[in-house]
Image (cartoon, rainbow, N blue to C red; front, side, top):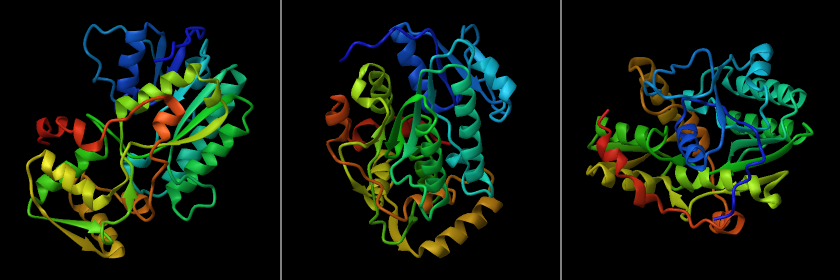
Length: 308
């Protein structure tokens, strides 16, 4: 394990209520590093345990004055927020770009020295898929900001509290006999364990070769979505029949069910994501960070506890 740089006075974490941010907080506390959480005005902060002493800044993502106050004395930003978990609602892609544009502008003005950004495998300004295009535009804003940056394009991040495996497990529990998958379920994904991702983000502070780079990372397996569904089903002791389905019809069905059932576990973002293979080199984590990442089936015990 490389030594972690302590030369930064304060680190800012966006997405204060997110599951990646939660893991990052625990790691920073173990290392004795100071941080501040940026929490949006619409987020619920009741998740904090009573008596916890945490430096919190509350600001709307488009409030420049609030962001300037939040970034006072901040030298490093880990931007871990994203709107993809909400789904395909109109305007969300534009929202992603607008928010990163404002945050980067304020960061530059406030003297931030390093900006970390979580993107997706497949991010591209020319992408035909809205969220991937938005991520590509956001990357370009950061690259041209003049701030030292590290952009990680990641595979699907999983762990307790994620929007990936837990929603998939919820869908299987809702329909334990039959699961429809887009196309033939052959599109490849590369799930990455949240602890491995957070470790790579923290170690990047001391890795000069990660500065001003766009790095693609994923777990040690390239799995078809069919295999992902099978693995999650086994973890929760279910054996649904998995059937291929027309992508267009399944998208229409998903939109209908979202309107009928509050908090339906799948949204239309998944259909954009699964329209193409989303993979990196299999040796990406060992090569860039010296980390041997966990295999997908090793750390899914948390799904057995989640019955929602």
